[in-house]
Amino acid sequence: MKITEKYKKILLVDDDIDLLEQNKLLLESKGFDVVTAESGEEGYNTFLAEKPNACVVDLIMEQHDSGFILCHRIKRTELGKQIPVFMLTSATYETGFKFSSATEEEKEWIKCDGLLNKPVVVEELISKLENF
Amino acid sequence: MAKILIVDDEKGLRLGTKRLLESEGFLVDTAENGTEGIAKGTSQEFDLAVIDLKMPDIEGLEVLQTIKAKYPNTVCFIATAYASIDTAIESTRLGAYNYIPKPFTPEEILHHLDIGYKHRKLLLEAERLRQEREVSLLEISYEKSRLRTIINNINEGVLVINTNGELAYFNNAALKNLDIPDLIIGEFVLNKIPKGISEIVNKYLESSEAIKKSYSTQVDIKPNFELVIEANCSPIVDEYGKISGIVIVLRNISDFKKIEMVKSQFVSMVAHELKTPVAAVSGFLKIIMDESLNVSYEQQREYISRSIIRLKGLLDLVNDLLDISRMEMKTKQREIEKLDLVELLNSTIQFLELELAKKGIEIIKTYQKENIYFNGDQNEITRLFTNILSNAIKYNKDKGEIAIKVFYSTNYINVEISDSGIGMKPEEKAKLFQEFFRAKNEYTRGVSGTGLGLTIVRRIVDSYHGKIEVESEYGKGTTFKIQLPINN
Image 1 (spheres, helix red, strand yellow):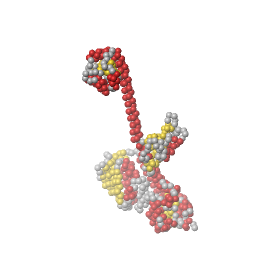
Image 2 (tube, helix red, strand yellow):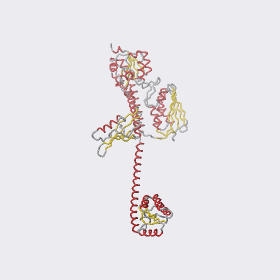
Image 3 (tube, chains in turn brown, orange):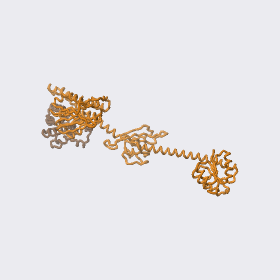
Image 4 (cartoon, chains in turn cyan, brown):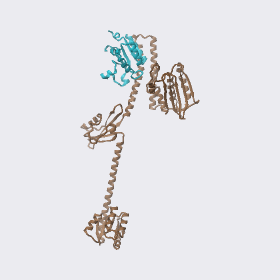
């Protein structure tokens, strides 16, 4: 099955409307359906309403940990447990935390299925989805 | 010239001896009985004294004792006609230098006094040496206690470790800097001090050749920068070039570390804030360049104009950062002059007219006097008003209003700027003056800014020793209350 069919609908959450629109455009050009949200709260509501096949969540939005909390909330739902949820971040810059060298225990605690470096490269997302 | 006291109740002998001794160059005083002898012998110090043993009032031995008690260095002779071994022993036991049997010839007494005077000089020399030694001992112990007091009271911890790794010296600050309750001189300490330090000490102790360089290291004694020390280790090299111990000086650098952390957090925040608009612009440009995306001409124009807005934001941010940096380095030349705050507020409002008109905002001014003067730098005060007023516009509602009040109180000029805007939640208000904090809620979408405006405001107000307070109600509006000290 083509990746765009397996993960047809993707939820993008980012408070930077320019980056949000660019990523939406790029993903749509590859054949995905994209729904967007601009905050943690809106992101969760959109997730519940739209039931996406994958999520990409920016880490720092209205609060420094908004993306973090959204990942946790999504992963607590039945659907959230089944679909890939990626966190979008230039994390070492922003938090001082080296996600790339996180231990298994830490990854468990982070509650997402992978990290995407900002600005997101669509190819990177696709390869992550293929390996999920 | 030797001073001598003759104590004798026999007048002839007394005067004869006096004459004899004076002719030999002595300074002679006489006493005719024991009472007078004690009075004279204790009122001033004589070099020598010749005391008759038998006197009607007081015995010669008692006179001897009394004088010796007062002046131990007066060399005393007992003169006696009843010379016996017993009295001789008794008198020397009580402090007499010797005894002179009566009657005596001039040669005999001069011989005795000559020897006695030499003895007196030795006694005085011994006394001088003893005093000298006491003074220098006093000085040494004073010097020692002074050094100890200094070392015990400096903030820097000092540890001295010998070549066996045993503690030779430490001060109070060392205990504090290492967070150790106590140390004992002579105990093996390499397992008690932090590993980073003991590794350096071992390097000195294990090297076959004496290392003469100093090494330093930083150790986290308590986490979260609560206690960070810098240890400076230097060898003590003896006269043969061998290491006889290591001095470790410990300095508490927690505060430096905290500042360093704040700085590096600031740098990473700045990096993030700079990176985001660059990413947005470069994203738009890549989309426009990508022919496969087939972006329409209108869409391309929109992306370019949005890029321009992001670039303007980036430029504003860089300018704000430069301002903050100039304020911090105090390189900004201040030109303090007499300013009319009313005039400055009016010209700032004029400058912002376009933005005010766009939102249809009305300004209500209440100035206590026609001119309100303040001594300050025109650029800074204009910046202060511009930043607050442009926030009052940006975060206001359409057709809202801004009330500006300027009035005097006891020591301050008060400037209050209220808007009828979106207000702040208490948690947003708490972070208001933090660098890069920008309220993000349902109302703030599309409001641009660097996140540094109020940081700059706070710094300007602080630099004039003024005060700034904020009152806000979410959804209703915000009031900034600035107090500037009356200074002219």
